[in-house]
Length: 550
Image (tube, rainbow, N blue to C red; front, side, top):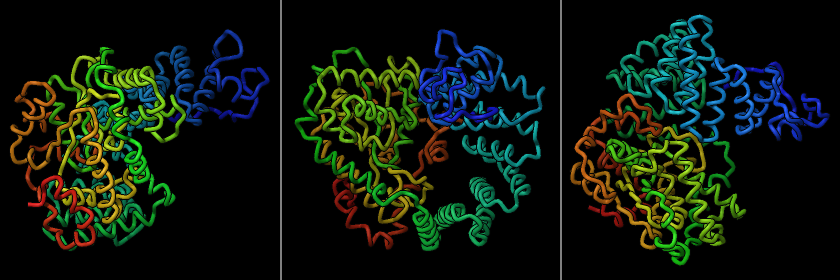
């Protein structure tokens, strides 16, 4: 939370506690006065808490906000800030509980104070952490308090669209555009809602107006992309690809990443491919590692846009499964590995340097983080840890969890390329290369080459799950999946899309998975066969290897 304190303390300034030391060497480090008594002055505590947040020291911020909450337990701001500090430490179960307590307080207090600012900020934070229902309740309260506020209305629109309530979001988005007629982002959002509510022509016209005005390069690029998606639906494929290409070119030109950063993913895969030998992958057999009483994890991975979100939603509808939505815990596990060994980003070398006790420590770390994020149920149900990017860490997973089960999502490489080209990815090491047609093919080839090299050597059992099989015969496909996970068939999974409605789903597939399985995304690439000329040679080995030649 960002409520402003009266002033901020510089790290090199004298500590306000009176110790005559610099702040960074005193209370910024210890979280307390140089003595046995905690700080009791609210203003000073608040300054310290804000400084810790500014320094991204969320563990220290937690300490200060706990003291503030103890001093003023009915203060919604302190409660929410404590929750936020915990969430930024990825202690989501505990952090979200505090955010929800703050929500209840605000719902009781806001109508009296008539101040919507904290409620609006907390609503946005709740949505970020996936608590869509609570976020929507607060957003509605804020609109009640400030019915003419464009930001309040827009926040409610975002809450509604994230749970696919586009019919209610439409008039609110129209009101935002009336209040902010020159704001391109508001018009792009309204166009997306218009498209989803059947007003395709109006949506396309609105996007073309945003493109013509070109008031904001980022929003112009987004408008080009969304126009391309709509043109694809209308069967105007040449125009669609041209619009998508313009969007990609604008986004690529605006990249701030150094060229070396853009190669990070490829460098990592090359290093992993060379370092994860058969000897390392099979160094510790299941019998040696897996006598610690910990559950057997399952991992769902693939490449982006291969159907992992669909599979996660289906599996999550089974009463004996906890399926995670884009879990980052494997990434945290690699960070813990680096911390343990000091070997930087060479995960294979780090693992090679460990003894069995070091591996056991990492296994305990993984399940502790799982409990912190998803609760104690993870120790009694089948966890399916879903993140497509975990494919890059399949070597790490295999060494630490030789007993694990891996579900690997497959889809026609050409359909993956088309789907990636139609997504608004934020530039990051794992997505920066997906802003160009050629980059998408190159990244697909690099990731899948790594999987093909390791899949015959890893100890975990794996099952490759084809998106096209799900579409063609849902029940047969998922009976095979549940058999692989040693779980009985559960007929309720066929209604996975009903469960998805009204739930926050973090990936771009949040709208698609709230519908029954549909076939229109299969062989979509055929509309762009001519455009595959420059990249088909890079994809051909995988088209053949995964049985898509026919």
